Structures are given as C-alpha cells and as structure tokens.
Amino acid sequence: MAIGQYDIVTDTTPSGQPVVNAYSTSLGALGPAARASIERTAEIVDWESGIFGPYPFEAQGGVAGPVDGIGFALETQTRSVYGPGFWRRGANTYVVVHENAHQWFGDSVSVAEWRHIWLNEGFASYAEWLWSEEQGEGTAQELFDFTYASYPADDEFWQVLPGDPGADRVFDDAVYDRGAMTLHQLRLAVGDDAFFEILPPWATEHRYGNGTIAQFQALAERISGLDLDDLFTTWLFTTGRPDVASAARKTAPPTEPKSWAKIRESHHLMSH
Ligand SMILES: [Zn+2]
Image 1 (tube, rainbow, N blue to C red):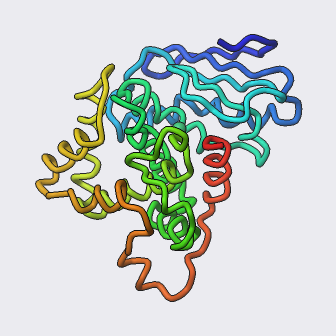
Image 2 (image 1 turned 120 degrees about the vertical axis):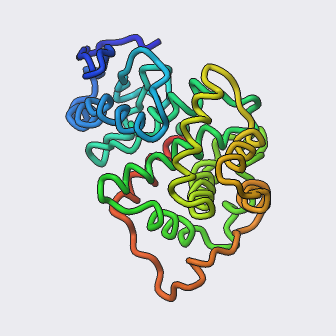
C-alpha cells in the first residue's frame, strides 16, 4: 500500500493489460528520470516475456515513492515500488528490468525457503545483464568479467554462499552478483540454446507455487542432458572465488561495461 500524493498515469498494453503507474509529487527534479524509467514497464515486460515465457499476472505498473521514502525497490506483484535513490543518476531501466523479472522469479515462483533466495535475486540480476546485452551497453560476458575482477579473491564477498547465505545475509551482494555469475556459468556450460530453453519451463512448472535450487538444477540437467553438480556446488555452495578459464587468460583488466555503474548502484541500494 502506498499512501500519499501521486500523479497516476494509466494505459493499456498492446496485449490489453491495464498499466497503472504512480509518481510521488514530492520527487521534484527526480520526477522526469522516474517517469522515463517506469513508463517503459510494458516494453520491458514484453521483452522479458520473450525470454521467461508468458507474463504470469493480469496487470502491470510501478510506483515511484516519495523523495524521503524507502531506500530500496520491491517487486510488489503487478506494481513494483521504487525508492528515489534509483533516479539520482538519471533514468534507470535496470531496476525496472530487475523488479519485473521478479514477477516471474519471486512473485509467481516463490522460494520454498529463504535459503533458496538465489532463485529470486540471481535471476532478476541476470535479467539486467541480458538487458544490458540487448541495449548494447555491455554483454553478459563483459559484465561477468568485470564483476569477477572487481571482487579480489580474498574479498569477503566470496565467503557468502549464494545457495545458502544464512538468515542475516539473504540479501547480500553475493546473492545478486555471484548469483548472476552462476547463471552466466550455467549458460556457458549448456550453451545458449539449452540455457534459454530452461527458463520458461521453470516459470511455468512452478507458476503460483514454490521452488528449490535442487529442483532448478534437476530441470537444467534434464534439458541440457548434462551433469551440473560440479557447477552448482562450485558457484552456489563453496566459499572462495572459483577459477574461471576466461579470466585466467586475460592479461589486462577488463574494461568497465557502460551499464556497470547503474547496475552496481542499483544492487547496492537493493541489498543494503
Ligand atoms: Zn531483487
């Protein structure tokens, strides 16, 4: 529930779904960036539907909260809520991609227990990498390389297990960033064709229900025909920075993808 003074903008998607967007009148100079981001919701949901399968709900939209309001964003079903911090660098479609990916991964398919939070945050974060790739602002591989290099091997980041982060670290950076890295490693292991065949049935088979990481691994193994136990164990359930062939080959540090700053800042706001 959002109570306050809002400008309400309603619309209908090409598929006929109602769109309700609300912008706090207190946003002032942040208002245009909030609008330029949230008003792209229907376009983003349509793009996500092409990757994740049919959108699981009957309405779309977003709420830009007041300037002195929440410091995070939340994937409220059919109408995500955004704090003002996301608009300080201008329009930010990455947070809109993230929260709407949660409509599939989090809202429709919910975690069986909080320890499976990677199924929400890893997937919503990887959706941002895919969006960056789509927008020409850095490929998922470039984001992987830069993220990997940005956390030194002795960084505490690598001590948190995305597959079982512990009750007080459910929304740790590792769940988001190493979580997205895990999905990228899965994509590299099974190939693009199989990887993009795994996501829609995950959303469909567990629609309006619950899921566990073991169930997702089983689905990925069924579709790819590969034993993925080593990959899941290494990336989700083992402390320390995993070795990566592509990183070891590189002599120069990777260059910063154009999308990095906004994704990084968005994750920082989401996870703190
Ligand atoms: Zn999230």
